[in-house]
Length: 565
Image (cartoon, rainbow, N blue to C red):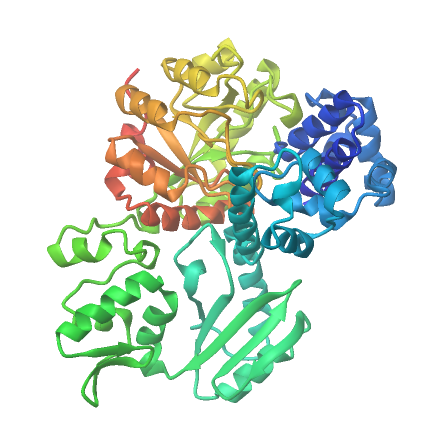
C-alpha cells in the first residue's frame, strides 16, 4: 500500500507543477517516478532499508530523498510545496477524460472552476464553450467524460471489494452465524469493479442479524435497519446492503441479487412464457412455489442447466445453456498447480521452504518458482550465483516436502529490443520460464513481445497487456490481436494473472484468446505464500471468460506442461 501512496503523491506533484506551468523536465521526473514506484513488485521500504532505491530506473537522488522523508516522517515536503495554492478538488478532475493539468489551469483562470460541481455547472450553462480552445466537440466529450467520472467514483475495484467483504464477514461472524453468508451482485460475478455490496444470510433471526451489522465498529452510518433488511455505509461511504432470507428461498434470492440485471430480465421472460413467475422468493405457478431453495432448482424450473454466476452477463450464456452448448467452465479443483510465484530470493516475502509448504497444504501438484532474473534491479533479480544457491534450496524442498513438484523457474525481462535476460546457468536448468515487460511501456511493446515469443525458452508471457485495474490502462499502442495470433502459432501461453490489482489478461481478453486456440495460464502471480489463495479467484475469472480445462495449461499433468522446443 505504501508504494501506491507514494506513486499517488508523485503523480499529484507532477500535476500541480504542470498546473503551475513549471519546468517540464521536473514535471516529467515526478511523472516517471510515479510510474516507477507503481510498477515495483517489491515494497519500497525494503529498497530504502537495503539502499537499493536509486537502482530503480526513474528514481534519482531527489525522488529517493522524497521517499525516505515520507517513510520516516509520514509527510513529503515536495508535495506540500507543489500543492500550495492549488485547489486539491481541481486536480482530482484530471480523472475526467480530456482534462489534463493545462486545461484545468485554463478553466480555473477563465471560469474560476475549482471542483466537480463547478465544472458540471459551467458545462450545463454553456460557459465552457466560451473558453479559448474548447470547441463544441471537446465540450461534448467533456460532458460524457464527467458522466463516466461520476459513475467510476461510485464503484470500487474487485480487489477492494474482496478485501472489504472479507473484513465484513470476519467482524460480523464474531456476532452471528455467517457460515452460509454469500456476497451476491457484481462481486459474485467477479466484475472488475463493484458498486454497493449485496450480502445474503439465511436465518430465522433477521432482526438480530441486521442489528449486529449496524453495531460493527467499521460502520460510519446506518441507512436502514429492519427485520430482514439493513443498509450501512463503511470505509468512506462504501455501502453494504444486507438481506436476511429464509433458507428455503436462498437459491431464488441468490439468483435475483447476483444478477446481472440483463440476465435476470431474460430469465423472467422465459418464466413468463412457461406460465411462471420468478422473483427473489422463488419460482411460482400461480400461488404455488415450485422452486427456490437452490439455484439449480430455479434454473431447472425454467428447463435450463445451472449457469455459473461469473457468466451471467447476457452475453449468450442463456442461449448456449438452452441449446446445450454452454461450455463446461473451469473449476478450481481442475487447476493442478501455480506457475508464476515469487520467493524472497527476489521480490517475494517468503522463503522457498515456506512457499512450497503452503502450496503442498493447498493441494498443488506442481509449483514453478519464477523469481526475477538479474536485470530486474528493482526486484533484486537473480544473478547466476544466486540462481545456483536458490536451486540448492529447491532441491532440498523437493526432498523434504512431499506431494508437490517444485520447478526451477525464472521470470525474465523483455528488453527494448525484444531480447530476454536469460543467463547460461538458467538456460541449462530452468524448467519453466515466463517473460514480461517491466520497463519502457511506451516503446514498441507489441514488437518486443512478438520477438520474445520466438525464443524457444519462453513458456509464457505474464501480465500481457500491462494494465493495472483502475490505475493504468496498459501498454501504449499495444496490439493484443497480433500477440494472440503469435501465441496460437508458437504455443506460448498468455497469463491470466489473478492479482486483484492486475487481472491481466482480463476475463474478456481471455475469452478472445481461447477462441483463437491460445493456451491460457491461470496464475496467482504470488509474492508471498498467502497469495497462493488467489488461484481460486483466477479460476472464477477464467469462468467469466468462458474458459474450460482444455483452454488452461495448468490443468494438464506435469509431463505435458511445457510446449515442444
